[in-house]
Image: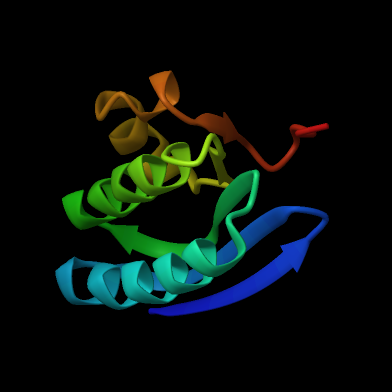
Length: 108
């Protein structure tokens, strides 16, 4: 599991890669939280385009970042979910809290 962070016009983008399980989610959470707490972006985008597997720890990763960012009035965007992860995210109710966009959608 890897995370690459990019800041662009008030938006912090976390490009996630690989498998998100308990161990990987903890590492990603620490890295994302450190950067987000430092820059306090208006939007935190979690890009899942290179995620090959995710269990409930990934859902926890999303929800925890939602709690963090909404604390200063920001929002979380979940982007580019592979088809096998879309159902898990929908069942978890994440669409009610976060903006969820697929690869063909434009967020602007």
